[in-house]
Amino acid sequence: MADQKLKNPALRTIRPGWQGNPMHNGRFTGEYGQGNQSMLLALKWQLTKNPQREEKKLDAWLPPMADPREFLKSKQDGMVWLGHATFFIRLNGVTFLTDPVFYGVSYMKRKVPLPVPPEELPKLDYVLLSHGHFDHCDKKSLQKLRQTHSFTVLTSLKMQALIQKWLPGITIQEAGWYQKYNVPQEQPQVFFLPTYHWHKRGLTDNNKILWGSFMLQTPKQTLYFGADSGYDRHYQEIRKLFPKIDTCILGVGAYSPAFIMKPSHTTPEEAVQAYRDLNGNTLVPMHYGTFDLSDEPLGEPVRRLQKMEAAGQIPGKLKILAIGEPLLFE
Image (cartoon, rainbow, N blue to C red):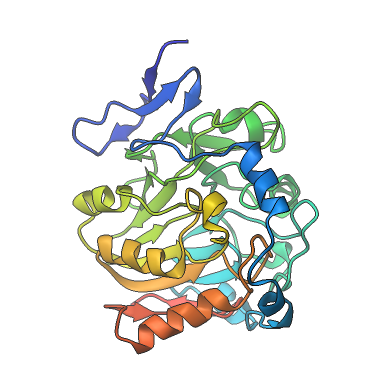
């Protein structure tokens, strides 16, 4: 199959000159290259001793918990972290849920529980699915949510074939990078943007579904949900289109060992650099503390962020949320 560029022709493209997502032999590739996702690297990881093994054993840190029900029942604009990459967000009365994962993933149990049962979540307008990895796109969680909620899914190119059979009758919009979803003009506008990442759920489906991030925008608030990403130049490209971002939600965990994690996730230091590239105001870290995905001690991402904050290396506001803690928007 020849190389091609793919986008959704029904959606507006916001980056001048962008022809669509590059594909090679039917598989998506990154704009600036693609990381190595060879199974040999996974084997190397299994055979390599973790230099932080003892430190990790002794680290009993867990994210603090809070009860989000008062905020969830209110009409206030804001968001609440439900763990990992799952956030409930309310903007101008319109509600979003990002990458809903309520339970364990494969053989991994949650280190901290969901702070509110899924059925107690308020009405949902949109579910944002950034990519197909199991810790972001969970069949059980989506089906549980569908039992009590009606919503539209905003997601990436080629995702519909995966999730349509899980959620019969659900409305799904797929977008390529730098595309704007078709939502009512009076609602927050939603854009799909790049990440440095990849896709895999089975043995032969590498990069057959696109991955990405989301920007939500109202006249008063611009919010970036960074999903899963390694550090790359896409943050600088995003800033050209969105020069000032009020809230940046960026991953800071699952970065060790670097030889396998660097093309997938950012370290705390790389996340702060991404936040600088994005010209963000408030940095909200995520993707740590809920699951044990990598070699670093569970509490290390927070400690490294706090050290940077104390050294004056974070130019705006760092908001380390408890799971279930709301962040209100002004």
